Image (cartoon, rainbow, N blue to C red; front, side, top):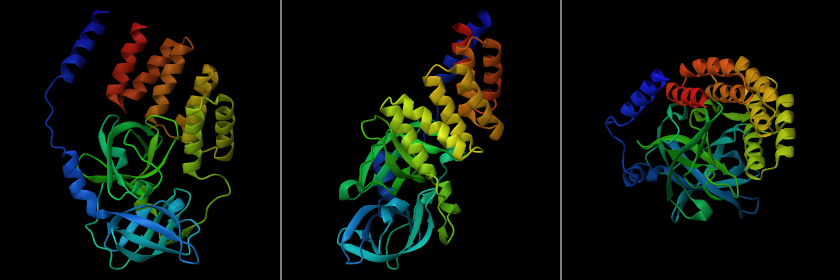
Length: 327
């Protein structure tokens, strides 16, 4: 017990040590990125606007957005204010919901690309886009959770709305860490961004879309069922996901979450173990495995899982260790 108390004291001491802060203020982040965020208008064959979203300039004349923003369009316009330019689809990855457009004449300083994999829970983030056509709207918040990966899908408290899709999620240094993609209606802190690392993976042309739901759709429906407390559909959806993508660690992790909610701890443990066999570096899976081992009464196995978590996320492992030992 004394060693535990000493550990708690050490953690508390470390938590109050001064940490140098070089982060930009929200207004500085906005000033740094505002010229790179544009409105994307999708037009039908008659030239009428059929959809509108946001986009982010990633290089001269080229911008990234979500594929669902430009889906079904005959032509596209990008810009801001009264100045819009014709754009053409350059590259498309419908599975990850990221498309690249080319627009000659579009002005603005391209964003600096960051990495979603470098984020931590509670890090500040800023969403800049055009929700409901309101250009250059800024919302601030923090990373609420990092889902799956690497690189992870970012769950953030920074608010997004219809029209925000394809906008930028920026870190405290003004680097693009994600494209704001969807939110779960009625949920708090359920706003999601696709990792910026995926942008570099989108190649010219079109990537065929599988018949099964896209990665974004799997995650979106998973979170929607949790928000609505629809455990029956959550269970069925996650089982379908693992059947459709048996080598997807995130699918097995999601099934473990569903089983855990239903107090089916042994089934949850099996699902998390499957996820870890596919991806041994899956910190969230090790974390939840330790919790469900503990809830099932197997404290030894729980502490072994904590040890594995420690090499990936020492802070979270220490917090979980104290929770298990003191309970």
